[in-house]
Image 1 (tube, one colour):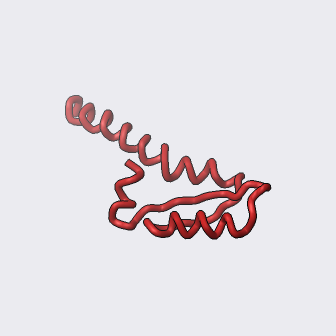
Image 2 (tube, helix red, strand yellow):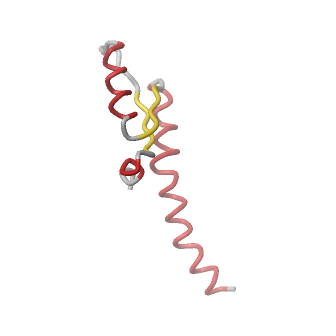
Image 3 (cartoon, rainbow, N blue to C red):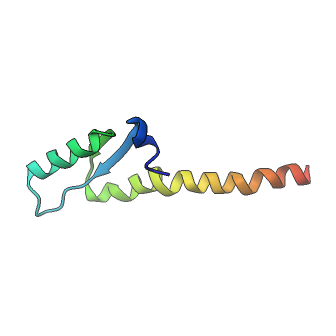
Length: 76
């Protein structure tokens, strides 16, 4: 559901420019993503952390709680 926050202009995005890009390319990408929320430029080394926090991290917590809480009520 990453697109849901963008519908109310509360999205969050991070991007890294490659070695063949120009500074103007980063400005364009930033302006595009900022039109639907927060945007920041990070290094390529930081992209894994961004993905883990914003993408799979919340999904893991959601999945874990969906499995754990029904079992908690059954066994307690």
